[in-house]
Length: 134
Image 1 (cartoon, rainbow, N blue to C red):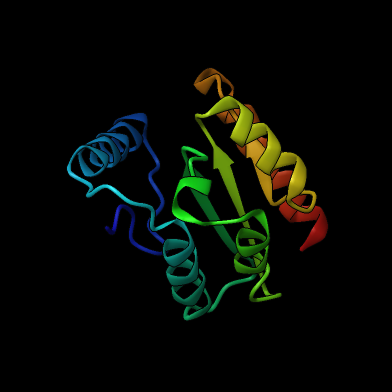
Image 2: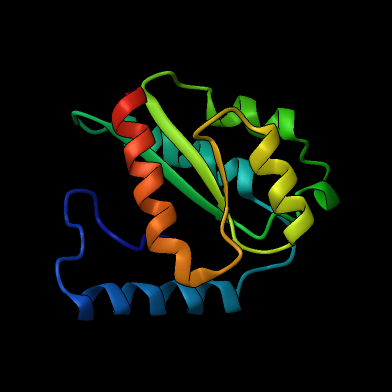
């Protein structure tokens, strides 16, 4: 589901709110199941298809991956599949699973953010880690 065209990041608060609205609408009509791994793989392929100084991929997950047979190792391999890309997952639900995954994944690959008011702070951490490790 394309939310933002490459190179056309939202500049205004209204545009960002519109994109969040699109995300909410997409999640309301999503089929059950988990496509986290496939979504990360598609995002990595798409981001490296463009010329850029840095390649960043962010996934947001409810951390309910174990129910679909997605192990921390599968997630780790997926996030590290292309060494040119800084990819990570922000887990926003399922406290125990989110904290376990964030601790199990390599540094900078998984973040637990169960209080969405902290999301901007977590994203700053993600960007800082990508800048240092990239």
